Image (cartoon, rainbow, N blue to C red; front, side, top):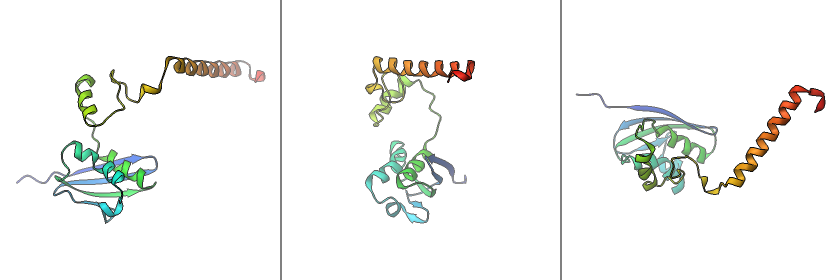
Length: 149
């Protein structure tokens, strides 16, 4: 008989750290010795924690034992979520973009750029570039002539 597969991971968000032990089971979640519903009493926090399992359709397939420290409830929920995230998708962005959008990820533009570019404009980019260029010029001038500051 093959041994049960166990996953151990650590997630971090801001000052929060979550250490997770996932074992095959019925979906029981304990956080710092307390029940999931007791530790994260609001639906948004519970959804943050459950989202990776829901996406993978594994909500009732694993038991989770979690040690969460630092920060507040929102940071800890985010750390738990990130601990369950796993790198490894190797398909081109064009193939996975429809899947990401279907599952609620809205921070990916049509060309695969992460982030929300909807608020950006060419004029805003020009202003940013001008400000960065001006700062760089000022820094170079100070390096070349420290007395000119």
